[in-house]
Image (cartoon, rainbow, N blue to C red; front, side, top):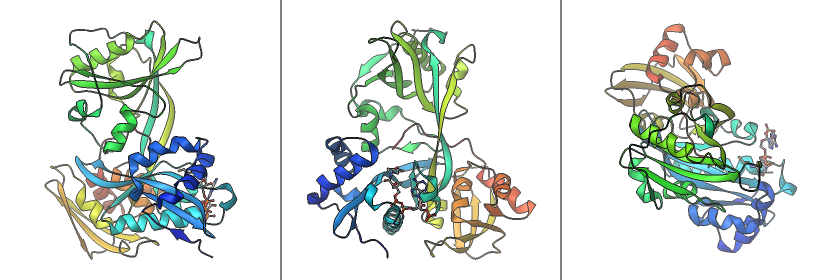
Length: 383
Ligand SMILES: CC(C)(COP(=O)(O)OP(=O)(O)OC[C@H]1O[C@@H](n2cnc3c(N)ncnc32)[C@H](O)[C@@H]1OP(=O)(O)O)[C@@H](O)C(=O)NCCC(=O)NCCS
């Protein structure tokens, strides 16, 4: 029997129970979930009840994600948790499925998340669509020393926001995401600007070498000129008396390490974020496309959850925008899952065909490859 799911807004009376459930799911004490609640707002918290009891819940970060240079509205799902005694009964699947429907009805064309169990999310149409790559470099291995530009300490997200230039796959950050970066729960952070050319948000974590040694956690950093990049590397190197290494998240092809003379930086972890296309026409028309690319692609989509997405579509791309209409030959057949990595450019259509996630003749796959060719989609944030 389908579990009895009740939806947002959260009844404030349910909060203590939900916080306790989420605490037990994530190993984070109940009282520490208050910042999650205040960042998202009760309207963006959903609760699943089973037999009148709070069995679990989730939160939604309302934000955007940049594809082809345009921000596409995104519902980022976080804190998906079901109490241990209610697991294995389909509660999470039903709760997330209903949340996806509510987001779609709200006009949000994309949902995203980081999956702890991929099987759950694949079953409702999510697929891997981009990278979050963990990097580290020993601070003494940083050989870029250039203090020509001044670095200044600044307070809070407002001082950084104008310098954040999101690229393909990056979040169009909401206030809640900025707060996670600049005011992390239970930790300190320091924000720096290099004039109008770059910025960094730094934190620390014990490195275990002694009570005083630490890793520098680069929560966020962007440099828009070579001089600003050198200044930020120097800022990191200036922590090397007690700091052991710098750690950050970026793309697998992170260009920042090209400033170092040697290949001293190492990849130490990889997470792949997932996307669910909630509204095929909405998602394809909202994103940007390279201005020089034009062409027409005929899709035939299978979507067991949203019949509005299923069937044939003609996607016509010209002058940086797509026009999407019903009809066409359906020469590229794909499930809604396969559309996610195609949409973000994470996998080439030829690779998707080898995976069995799309089917089409060679000419169709070539057209798809030309239209969806993009830089590596990545993001630094976890949400
Ligand atoms: C992950 C979690 C939310 C699943 O809740 P649940 O109500 O038991 O999940 P469901 O019963 O709806 O399962 C839906 C599908 O996911 C699969 N699934 C659920 N938990 C899984 C696990 N730990 N490993 C692999 N697959 C799993 C189920 O088998 C089912 O797939 P199927 O229909 O193909 O059999 C729950 O175990 C939990 O709260 N874990 C701790 C917190 C967490 O990891 N949250 C997810 C953060 S993204």
